[in-house]
Amino acid sequence: MSNYRIQKGDTLSALAARFKTSVSALARTNNISNPNLIFAGKTLRVPGKGDSFEPSKGSGGSKGSGGTGGTKGGGQVQGSGGAGPGSATPAMRKLAEAGRAAAMSIGGYNSQGLCATGVSRAIQNAFGVKVWGNGNQIDNNLPRDKFKQVNMSLAEALKVPGLVLTWEKTSTRAGSIYGHTAITTGDGRSSVSDFIERNTLGAGGRTGFKVFMPTV
Image (cartoon, rainbow, N blue to C red; front, side, top):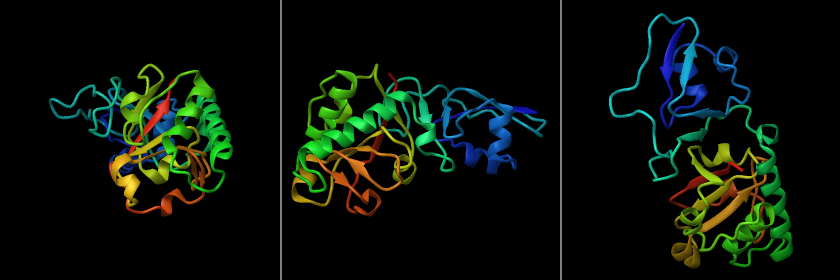
């Protein structure tokens, strides 16, 4: 048995491959109920290893994740296997439901160019907090006592309901100026804002991607 200090960007699946073990073995040894949720700075016990694995100097407890100036604490949603509705907290489920309701009340399945309005309305209805700004400003205006930035891919995020997604720019004229924001539904494909986007993975030309998770 050995110890490893989790760093930002780590995933349980990648660590399992690195230490030649399995995700289930790591989760079982460390009493991790959700393999897709690990935290930077925490110690991971690695079964079957005799040495300690420590990160290099200067990479200790991190501020945020993904190198994009997120929140303090380093909490991260990680991994690609097993993510889905079952891994969501009540707050995340509540936000996903509020997001779908907001989308249906504004545009249904057709974009109205009001993505930030839909996401802001959902956050207000779910948590009683008004968040201002357009698609590429909301990430800076999310209350840090209710949201934390997490490091995961779009494909991983779409499997988990109630995450706030933001992009700095999209391929449309308005999107190149205002960006885009949406809330995941957890079905692995769609997201909601001012409308229900049925294939978010297929929407190309988007850059500056970030993910935020409710912590309330």
